[in-house]
Length: 80
View 1 (cartoon, rainbow, N blue to C red):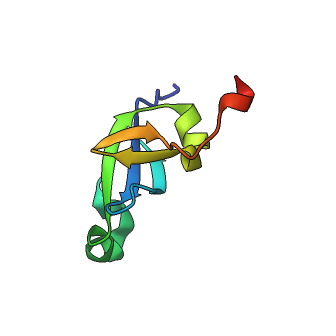
View 2: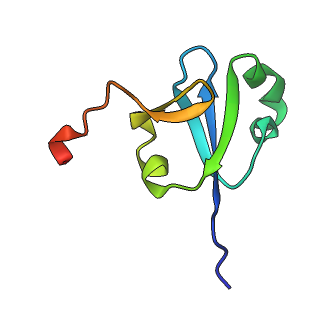
């Protein structure tokens, strides 16, 4: 039986909003194991609905005001 993936956890830099890491499912900062306390000083996380495009193109997104947004520096117009 195949499990449907419904969530994506995005770990991001609190100051810049840049994405550090992503994983499927609902996770929290314990994802970083013994380094959890260290990572909590710099990074935070956001759980969003699963989106394969975001997962494959994380460099085109940032977290801004608690929401996943297209990075304004990304230029997708050449693909439209």
